[in-house]
Image (cartoon, rainbow, N blue to C red; front, side):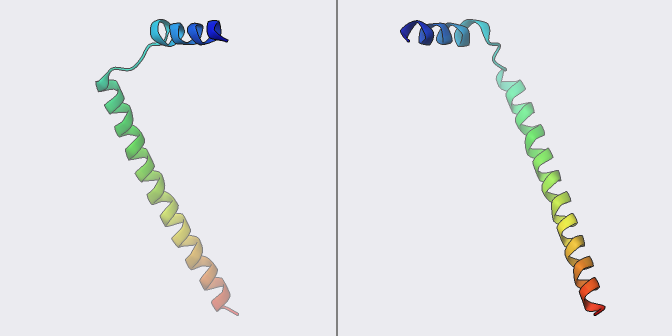
Amino acid sequence: MIGYIKSCYDELKNKVSWPTLTQLQASSLVVAVCSVLIAIIIYFMDSGSKNLIKLFFDLF
């Protein structure tokens, strides 16, 4: 078990390429913008379907 933990630590320390702060900030910005856009799209889809269902039931 100790050998496995040492191996994992060595791999994370020496073999994994970690992003720089600039790359991390750029990626975080992309994720935030995409999240907001998807939330807006879902809001309009929800509002539109709500209005269509209301219109349909108002016919009867």
